[in-house]
Length: 163
Image (cartoon, rainbow, N blue to C red):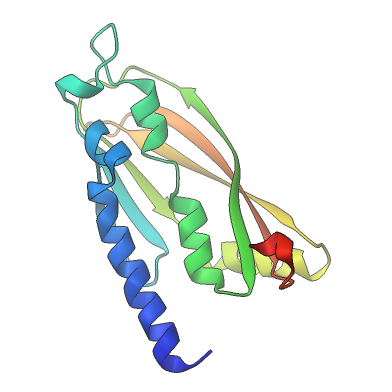
């Protein structure tokens, strides 16, 4: 791929990440992307505590807590692994630990060791289910929820099934 095309795709991805704050499911739920590192290996997200995202008992709505963790590991892996891989969210699991009664935050980190593990696993398998956990914390640093994400990764084969 020509260098100008790669630079354009990178700029477009940067722009798309900034649009997350205006994406209706995030905007309506009070979810805000606060920080994305230049190498897309670190993302920080916050969920405000407002009238529109409270549940029946007045605490943070669990669906909003879950939504704030949804696409990030998939996108971070797409960005870091590049065009030679197909990356899809496959599964997710959430465990609520305590009620959210304040602004919440989630901190996503993708390490070089994570990326190396993925590449290594794909040398001997046609696909790999990457699992990563993220904690959702309140303003006091207490864990409100733990989320396990499963992202499936496979090398691109340029077949119709990759589209």
